[in-house]
Length: 378
Picture 1 (cartoon, one colour):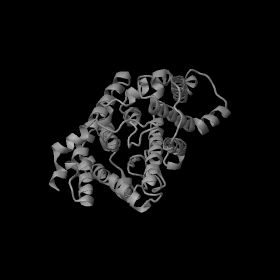
Picture 2 (cartoon, helix red, strand yellow):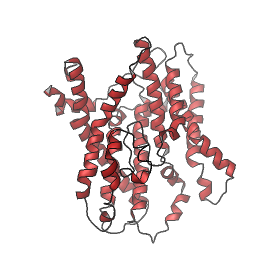
Picture 3 (cartoon, helix red, strand yellow):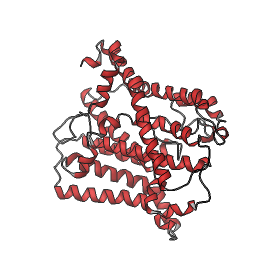
Picture 4 (cartoon, one colour):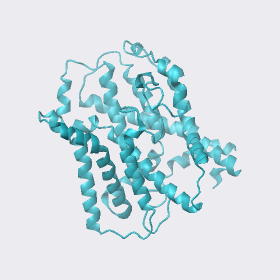
């Protein structure tokens, strides 16, 4: 049992860059490697968006600079549309639920214990969530000082509704986001709450991912040609770019009709999910493609295991650093990027520590209690 808490053994597990090969029509595997790159890049994108929001909403920026000029820069469009990174996590969640669920049903003659499945998932997410709630409520008030810091210490939502986070119902109760624990979400692949609180608003990418996951389990699929791979990849990348940059002309003075706004609001998430499906499908069936080689890079694999911890920890990190500033700071590209890199690196370092001390030991302990043998001996 003590070996479950071995720091060195757990570090080896975390740093392992070996997974099953990418899915092919002749394989029965448990891993789709390109998702590792998607997960890490999307997490970095989320931190970039929250870096901007944290600095912009804190009141510490030098307001003598014309902030309104920045949205007219095309390079800033990904910051304003960082919430699409959240849609990517929903897409991956739907894909993996359908793919692994179908494989599980095949192995168990179509039977599944829903209660056991839900309980295992809940126990997988709960330990780190509980620890972060403890940090947020118990330690955060003592982590800073200064003129801005003390304006942000009133947070009755955490004191009153902390239990809703531990039950993972914070997207439904409290009804008011302002009453939630600082408005941050902590639900692994239930990444939401920063923009819209209800999970059903994020169904389109989840459903498209679910359909792709189901499709990948179907046998005897015809092998597409290399031209088909390239065509689908190019169209998918163009679709992603259009979704992110669609409103850039507005910053340049162009006007859109109400029909366009309604159409974009209705279809943007669907298009995002379909485009991600195209890229994922192409990566799976074209292992030698450039996109697949990049997204399946082994360096992404250990980092992708940390994204849950990064997602939970980075709001606290941003809060503590931003609101500890003692004087106004200039608002420019360098300021944003320096803060972003700081938040990104420190979040992954903290997530690695939490993974080694909390997540992996508890997972090892659960395996030990089920089988009676240490998972580290396997």
